[in-house]
Length: 296
Image (cartoon, rainbow, N blue to C red):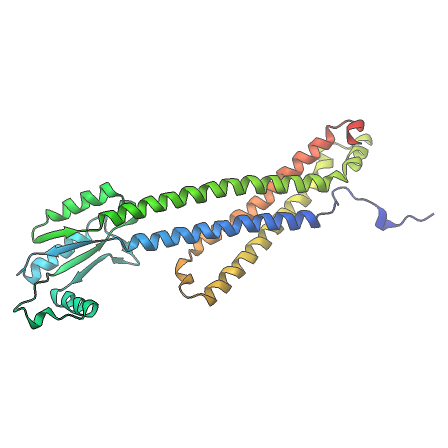
């Protein structure tokens, strides 16, 4: 009597469709939250780049003195440096008067004999120096520069930004921790359920003398492959969504940090493979150590 080859069960060939779907979905959710964290980090950097110190100069300084002050400011380690440029910008008193006219619609030159505004510099501060104490020290240092009349900054705004960003970081950190625990449990339970149908086959292999390593190998290889595949699918879906959003929402491209995104995608692939591998190893060991009565 011929045996239908379709009814044969091969070691390691358990139904992985549900495992693949569940792992892909879990990694996609983790990745989506990771993308949100990366965007939040980029947005934080943009906000911090707009924290500036106003340095007003004494009147009647020569061009050489003004240039000296700029060179000195640009040499400071706390000044933001980005794309080969420093965060020091000169604003002449005439430019300041023009900005005042555009903002208020009032031309004080019509009733004043001279421009009361001063030449100034705006100094963008590097992110690692943007604490209340450090900025206060920077302001005190700049005030000692010869030719500087006054230094101002929005102390309340700096403190408010730092407090709010800290709160957001704590909330995101808590969500990430809960999400990771949930995903690990979900993938682990899904793999255990998928292997449940293979428990008697595992015991049969034990009874005919197969070693534990021989029994585990096909399960682990298959689990690792599908974990890697789930990570690749999840990463691909995230990349498509990011590119679609970037093409349809103005300004979204400014939040992209592709180096961190590629690290995230690589992490999803590695996490998918390793988590599936260890969950499968745990489940197979569980069935290998069960008695026949426990298997039923």
